[in-house]
Image 1 (cartoon, rainbow, N blue to C red):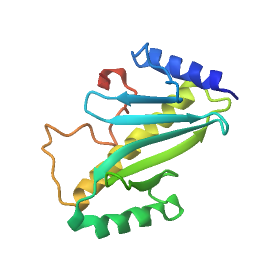
Image 2: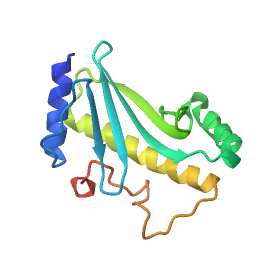
Image 3: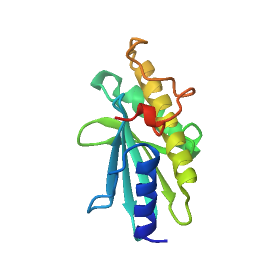
Length: 160
């Protein structure tokens, strides 16, 4: 397909979620931040007609590093518990990220929204799992909607 198709999808997505100014920047990047602080990064690579999605799913404290690395490596083994996405480490800031990519060719807005919704639910699930592994508890009043119940970031009521 083409960059114009991705720009059109981004425009449609922005309209659908109540962010009419949503657009790819000059580097083909767009970032969406929800009211509850989830940051979803989208990078489009025109040569491959691929959209790369990524978000932070947790901090890696020094005393839990080995435990978290083992869990992330196990999860990436044949992508059994990542639904095809990849857990990785941002080496500059020691944050765990969830990343996935999809081919944009012939993608419709409903398909894109479904993919992004699934990805954000997966990110919530991994964020919860990492917090549990490091023994961090979050007050129920502060915690976002459960990943299994979440309508996803693309429910306009959850967006800033």
